[in-house]
Image (cartoon, rainbow, N blue to C red; front, side, top):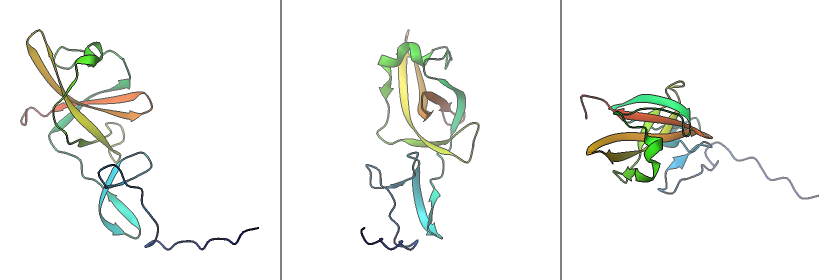
Amino acid sequence: MGKAKPIKSKDEQSVAHGAAGRAVSENNVALRGPVNGGVMQPEVFTPGWDPVHVGLEGAALSIGGINPWMHSKEWQLVQDEHIVVPHPAYPHERHRAWVYEITSSGQTTRFAAAELSNGVWGFYVPHPATA
């Protein structure tokens, strides 16, 4: 039998890092800020976004009169950086969402989308004051 490895102190425990080098939790929620008692603080959510839908992938929804799932091949990524949004039902949870636009019949609709859990998507729209 091999020798047991010593347990690391809180200061020595490693934290997983995402592609951008930022610490992430098990559910890929970005973490940042000072370590308090060995726990990273959650990333603050991006202001100016309102939740409009939570549901299964492909479920009926309307954003600006357009169902994004009916135009899923037309989603155009608007910015390289993600936004951070709270889960509508569990506001303490933070999720990365990407901002997209769809143009249909001459109308452009902007929204953010995040897979909140396996097959469950959240959609967000810019707050009217920031749109």
